[in-house]
Length: 100
Image (cartoon, rainbow, N blue to C red):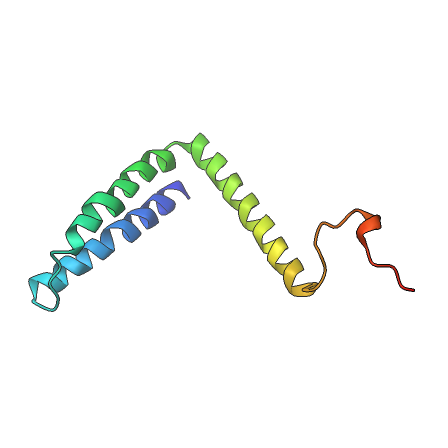
């Protein structure tokens, strides 16, 4: 799982650069403005992520945190869809409207 995650990260960081370079080589686009973006932003992100993915302890922490975040986010979205007019998390009964 760690190897596939690391490979996926490499793919998403390097394929855009390879694609833009390929298009530039064949004259499809002028990629000169894109190179600083890749060299300053995208490739260093890949360099930061790789050591975290290689370390299995940090990978497990990352995985648990990501799963927790995604599950909480999906729960919140589902509640918003199911109860669009209600105030989620409302626990104070004095703030509720009472019928007259």
